[in-house]
Length: 282
Image (cartoon, rainbow, N blue to C red; front, top):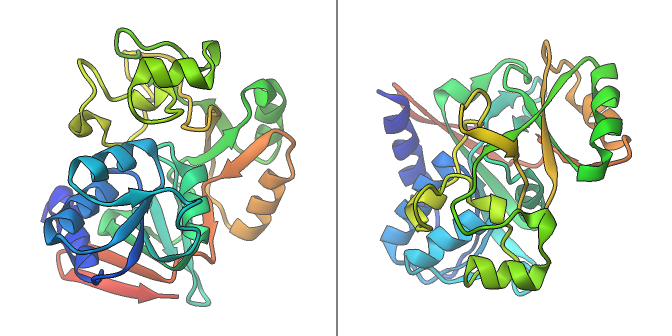
């Protein structure tokens, strides 16, 4: 079974868990994108909140009813992928998320849900977090202050870079919310750099966020900017042996908005591999 086949299998399984009348949080990333498509195909009577502009646009394009968190502050379930999944010694689920660049909104939406189901292929299952670089979202101004502080914690932080923007879009930092709205279309306040994957035109197909980062891409010419207008530092290290301690240390740094450690939040992990879909419940 290929990785793509495993992702499709687990996305379909997760969609089958959703029933009519459910209020669903939609994740961001390649596996979450497959889940959104599978869920839309079921044509259920559900209401949704998306964790990124890309997922919002995709769901709307598929005919799904998508609202804001202000309209739906309490969700029944949030379903999203992960870059790493670790089944902790006590049976809890520890995750690294943020490869798709939406970690802040993902954590906000996940925290509003009664249940958080993480969907992944077996390559994401690890014994210890940290092989995948930990994303840390920071205020742009704080970059020169946060980088050395993260280095002091044993990480090698690297500013995430983005592909060039499609012609006609302006950098978020040079335009206000109103002009951004006018320039970028119908999605209110949508940052220009949220469309990093769009090359020729804006369509739901090329708005689908990916787990992979832009590191090493010859087209990566400027810093990646999140939907909330922040930078992301991808932090490489030898491994995260004490996630709770590391999370607290990172959050104590002034200028850090959020980190990609999702600890004690997921209630169920669906992991697809050669033996089908296995369940790990916290």
